[in-house]
Length: 350
Image (cartoon, rainbow, N blue to C red; front, side, top):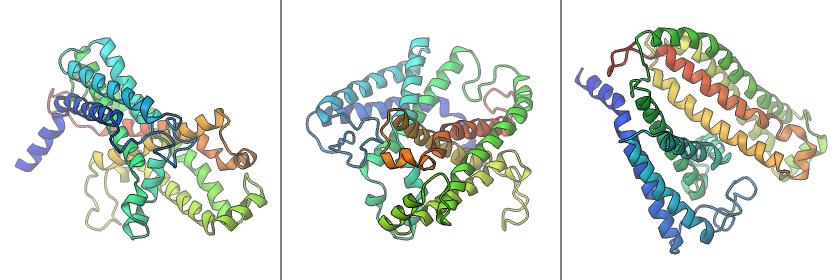
């Protein structure tokens, strides 16, 4: 009982620590920006320091001398704004918080965090080392996503405080919880089906290629890819299988087995699924899928795709729908949260 009370207290206290955490994160990057400006090693942006970021990274064109001072200014300014939001929730400061949240979470990262997470099993079985799997520029992107989430939490808390709603759950009146659950059951189902369907387009093409079927590409493209990198299409099919598995798990957001463990799971059968068991991984996948999809949209719109990819539309065509997948998965996850959240232990509303 005591342990449960401690965990509940920690979860309900997040509105108090998220703002200072965002300020601390920004301060660290502000100091790093100053150090990088002075020539310290570890600058993670630009083609000179991120050799695999050419084209795919939105910051590939920058240089240390030009960007490091900007990192310092943005970091230190962000620390001041986050600190101010813990005391006074002005519209301007909230707007700045959302700019930081969106920029760090969805604009700055590319598709590498998603790819590295998908390939993590190779790290677990010893196929590659940690430094090879997670080089500093990729780790930095993951840290930026974490910072973006801290900024998003700061903006949410400040907005709730400005609206005089509960900073912990966001409810403003007792009836809001019931109405929210009923509405979430409707639109959450639609969002879930979209989040299930979109990745299957990607899966279908990758399975077809592994079987030698030139779906959306030329036979020459398949032969050249296999000749250059033997087994590449089998690896693609494995990633497609992960996507299909994720689509099946997404159905749990609207199925009973997403709330009560089914009988065929030993040791857990019949037990209640903790909401965060589904919410945390689904949220992270939604974020990484969206950032990866936005990268594909950006390089396609800017005409930065290599010729062979432009000529073989299925190489990037399914990925252009990934932002829709990520948004739908995020909406479905939020609907699941609204349906499953209990009465607030801070304000007592249900």
